[in-house]
Amino acid sequence: MITKKRFLVFVFLLTFGSLFLLDASALFDGKNELKNYLLSRGISNNYIQSVFKDSRLTFKNVNFKGKEKYFEDDFSLFRPESVKRGKVFWQKHKARLAEAERVYGVKQEYLVSILRLESDFGLNEGSAPAINYLYTWAVKSSSDQAKRDFAKRELFYLFKIALKNNWDIFSIKGSYMGAIGYCQFLPENYERFAVDGDNNGIIDLSNWDDAIMSIANFLKSHGFEYSYEKIRDSLWRYNKGKYRWAVMLYAYLIQLPN
Image (tube, rainbow, N blue to C red; front, side, top):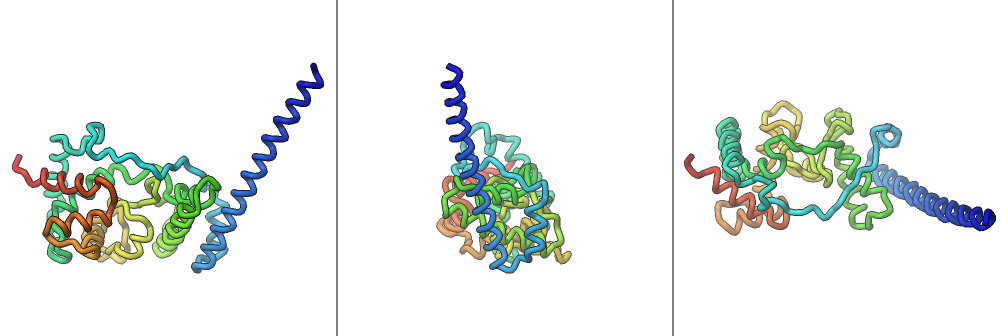
């Protein structure tokens, strides 16, 4: 009986140990793949190593299949108090919103609506460093190649943002997708469409002036014009699925009289 128990324990340890070694090997390969990619894009080895050795670099539970809750009651998007908050925000930032409309031709109500959906007017930019979500996808063997490639590319741009602004990369909070700031831009979109709205020499998407002007620039760059089709299509480029319908409805509601 003792011999049988020992044999079963041995088999268990052998199996578990083999799986652990395989997982560790996959993580090592994924980390090296990411390092080599970043090096090939011009990020210095010293900076890469300093980030990789930082104890704040951790894996996160991530899921690409985010559920669209815009029209569900617990999202509270269309409740009277939510609509009122949109109107208050619009009034508070009317000067910058008006400037964005003048410069880019994007109607103000859509800028307000996007900021409500993306970060609840700054209340939800993400609770953890964006790098940790993207790092998990880039390195974890459970991610498929398309997701790893996405994460590697966004990590490169996130590294660029931190280096350009001399920011601690772990101070940049983000969503499970790695999106950052009040407007929840992916790092690559920061590089392509983010605007220094207050002309202080720094593009910070956790700054209302920069976030507002950056959204307007993104939408204009994707064909926004004041017609149903152009609005619909440019919002589709901002986010897929039911997102555009939610933005359009909220934008309509905040224009109604009290």
